[in-house]
Image (tube, rainbow, N blue to C red; front, side, top):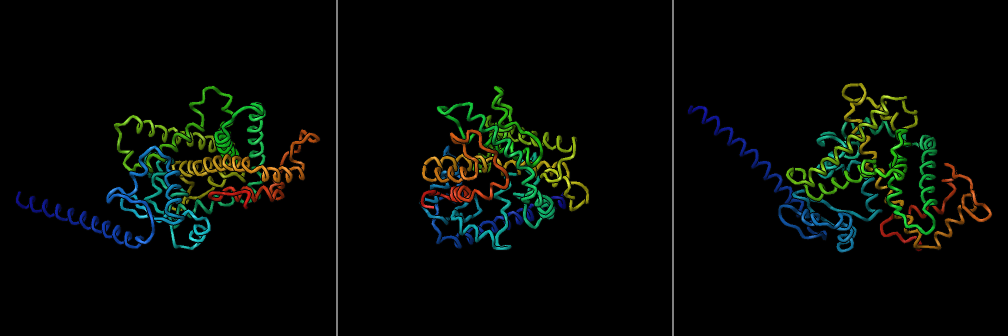
Length: 385
């Protein structure tokens, strides 16, 4: 009995020592990084939570960050719990930093929340969240990269055109006096384009506008799940508040999104093999670097989930923002129309039914291309550009 107590005390001493060592390393690292970044401006924050209380309110996270950019400039510091971060909003500087080989890798601690949207318990990192030296990241990136070649994108352009025509039909049906939510329309189109071009599956984003039972469509599922992820970015402890009704609803939203992705994967793998140029075909051809066989369904579902997550919101919101910018600059709109007219793509009195745009036309619409690129810059000024 006496010996057992001694062993127990020894184990307890070792555990306390290990925890103390880990805690001292975290505190020292936090202090060291704080000293390194002390000359940079940034918001004030508490000792333990850092800037998390700033994110806990109802103000959208993007607006909080934008306010800090305006107050502290294009480079400022902040801390989430004990993790320090240097935020860079200047596009030129950000590009230079990201092009430095092996200088910066992904911060798994910051990105792990995204994995909760693509795998049941966040256990599988995806191409977006995984470290670039991981064998799965290397194998999957190498395997799917050819799907984004110009030749393969050209083969999927017919789906982009068909989806665009669906949106245009909706706008025409509404009439010139109608008020339309273009952001919502373009989010739907983005989901459809990713589904059709990448996986030859119609997600029904635009088509579901004709269905009064919208609660179960892919857009609602995707947006609701993304909102839950944003809430968890704001509050790292949110997932543990299992007694709250909104947390339970948020978890259900994540599971619904994962189920939607698994249903898509089942269609891809059980039916006719996808066309060789598609993202689906390239993903199915990736060999597991550890087993030599096909990737597991869990890992493929995680990758498909991140493709949709990374593509539909960014594309849809950017498209709506660009349309707004052009509408605020009639001189830019006039030049875009002039360029389209020169290529026979504009509706006019003399040409009520212009020809359909082709993939080759995209390279010829140089002014439109410049307007899009300038419009994607922070605080874009199309007229000055």
